[in-house]
Amino acid sequence: MTLAILRTGFRALRRDRAAFVLSFVVPIAFFTIFGIIFGGQHVDMTPRVSVIVVDEDQSAGSHRLVQGLLREGSLNAFTHPPRKQDGPALPEYTAGSAEAAVKGGDAPAAVIIPKGFAEHPIDLRPDDRAKPIQILHDSSDPVAARLVAGMLQKTIMTAMPEAMAGEGMRYFEVAAGGLTPEQHGRIDRMMSAWRARLNAGDSGNGGDRGPFAESGFAKLSVRDVVGEKKQSPMISFYAAGIGVMFLLFTTSSAGGTLLDEAESGALDRVLSSRVSMTKLLIGKLIFCALLASTQLTVMFLWGAAVFHLDLFSHLPGFVVMTAATSIAVASFGMLLAGLSRTRAQLAAISTLLILTMSAMGGSMFPRFLMPALMQKLGLLTFNAWAIDGYTKVFWRDEAVTHLFPQVAALVGGGLALFLLARHFAKRWEHS
Image: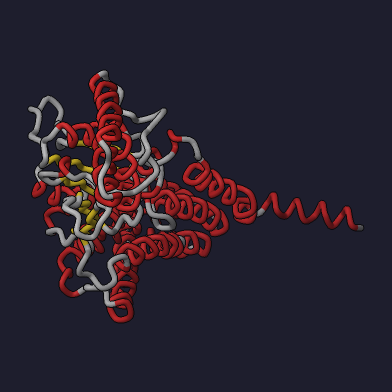
């Protein structure tokens, strides 16, 4: 009897495709995605933080620091804007252009090495003359500033060992009440040997890194240049990410009414009238888009009422992004309905695709913390483009004209999916 019950249960599971997908395919898909995001512990899988480097000091010491940052494996450091294909080389960043680039989202952080830095590179006393290195930060990426600060401290110690040692000896001499001529001679010989190694091309980055390699003596100043005056800076990010994920579920369910109508015979009666399949799908698309727009509006209104999201000063950008996102997700729902044969099949397919898209596209985990490959793959989803667009509107306060890439991807992708849905809907015309 027990064996018969077991056989019956497994046969039912095999027939129920939705239950089978939820039991085996969805967990494996999620395990794979999050394994790629979190499982790569070697250097190649660790996401590198992009950082702009500006050298206002233009000294030998600051030049070695810049070269050390450019070689640092954890950073994607650069001193020039990326060169366009077949275009001329662009000038180096300045403090002003670097700040504008961080505000525009070209990099999450910028390092400004001040003039006079090499004269006093470390800070050991409150009244010290050392000038702080400034880190300009986009606080929508909470990891970048911390990582850049840590790598900067490390690189200062490893790329400028003779400067660190010289400053340290001067501090020690003041604290100890002076050194003897013999002690000065030994220090000078040590410094000469270090300079000889540097001139020979040994930056000290590896091997014997000097006595201050693990310390943090450099004076740093971190300033948020994006989002510093916002009360709830990340609310728009979460509203967009969670909102789009549930919009996909809503529109796939709404699109499934086509399957209900086909099964009940109502679809045949509608098509036998003057309504064509194209007009019917357009009507369904408009309904799903309006439903999605209403859902997103309620989500952001709740964010404005409860979490102080600055919605009303960003209405133009919000309207544009909401319209584009609604068209995309509505077309997605139409396509799933065209691909599915039954409601159960629609539930299985939609669950697998929507959860996978949401994981890859940033609805569940921020894309900027993912490996570079996953960030690129995320652009295959509507979630990523919608989140990027809403981030431009609410976080970076960018103009509506700057939303063209996101709107084009969402609307263009939506129209392509609608054409595919129309193609698969031919089976109802011939049935």
